[in-house]
Length: 313
Ligand code: AHG
Ligand code: MN
Ligand code: MN
Image (cartoon, rainbow, N blue to C red; front, side, top):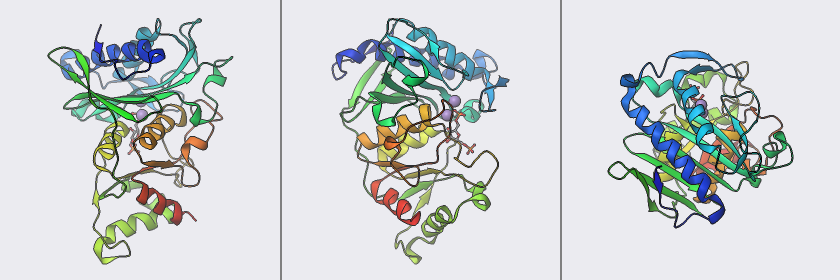
């Protein structure tokens, strides 16, 4: 079993967090082997949203479901499964997961991750997840990059752990991450520019104009293609991220899924002093109507998120 420093983890989450850490470290080992572990990025099927599933998407889902069987998780909702699975009928927690985020980066040795959201289990499997995002009791991500690290919140700040490869143990390195209120970087997939709405285009043009425009300062640009990597960078040095709705078919609510991508990242970001919205309302005030529904997502440094909201009128 992988060790996790549980000194700052509330008692009711220590078992589930240790199980997540164990599966996370196991997955980090597999990611580090890359092609030596087989064709991890090979296409193997399609998920509910019509995304192609890669071999590692399915393997990661199996690893987490297995590790969480004895961790008090009654309801398990995964990007890779059509409906909610009951893992531990006596458990009092529900856990939503994107087992492998950033799957287009598997084969190119760029940071990928796992995102999770924890809620109190409700009476029915679906009711555990189709509720206000503010009902989350914990949320986090594990990033598989130059370091394997885990950011997590239990509603009292955002903590950061790093996996020490010498001891196979997650060590607490920051008990309160704090996101700068102003930003020097923004992130959006600009290949979709021609499909954007006016407020999104206005925000990007303002950034591109830099010190010659209304903003009066230059902005740098980054796009990794892994939400986990993007969020970690923003939590560390500020910035903004946008995956807005656009005019492409199926993108009327953007690309990212509310229950296991948007809601947990919003919780983590707000607990670090940032903001998260769908352009109109704070993410944490919203309720998912369907397990795999998408939600436009804007988050990051508060001054910038306020500006984007202002442009949306
Ligand atoms: P996933 O690999 O779980 O399907 O998620 C990929 C997501 C997210 O990580 C990233 O921000 C976004 O998709 C990238 O989308 P584009 O390919 O449209 O840029
Ligand atoms: Mn994802
Ligand atoms: Mn995924």
